[in-house]
Length: 312
Image 1: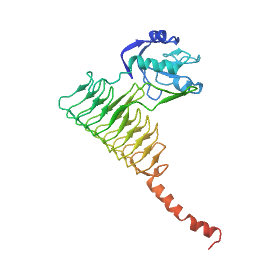
Image 2 (image 1 turned 45 degrees about the vertical axis):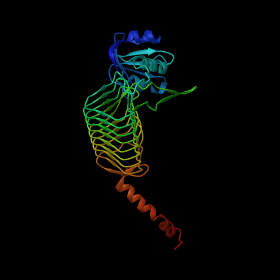
Image 3 (image 1 turned 90 degrees about the vertical axis):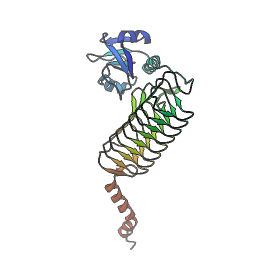
């Protein structure tokens, strides 16, 4: 999530009651979880084993709960509860605003767009030219929709990220400060759900087509001209290349990269990165030629064992 204006790190430290270590002249331009950070961003860490990863990340400002050596050109904000401080900063710049009308007065809807009855358009949404949104669809806050997009009935776009921090008191939700961006000529089937990013953007690339009841997790980036059949599910922070085909009920775990033009068969379960340009099958998913050979060999296993143990 980017701030509308840069914020002095000294000001942030004062607001959250943190001790500032390192470069006190820095300006924060955004705030992001560790997977998404860019120079100028704030991030947080509160587990020692992740300190090194955070300190070496692209983040310029790190909220941290123990003293550590500050890398050159960065700033550490030492505080008791970095997660709460992080969440409070996000809330300050992206406060919760419930919908009070079917179409928010802050939404920007092109005059050529068609909205059927009972469509809900949240705060700060932008909808492009000749986009068609069917009945009972909800487009939540800060979503950006391009031109010639079709969203079928009952889709939920921009739902909160399914993202929690586990604490002694239970699971604490993050404020979802990211967005959903749907590029031009995308088609989204009935009943699809697309989570907004935790602090980055969930993106559906131009020309991509989603069948009914597809779920896209937080911070997922889907490339251009992809085709996803019904009941596909994609875990958070996964990157899908261009021209990827996912057949029905394929499940893609979080934090993966799926290469361009990969094809994943129905009901396959993907738990590792996949190279592009290949067909995958099975659970766990493997290149189809290898997986089919293994299945063929497995069918002959009883016969092999009978021979091995002298039963024939």
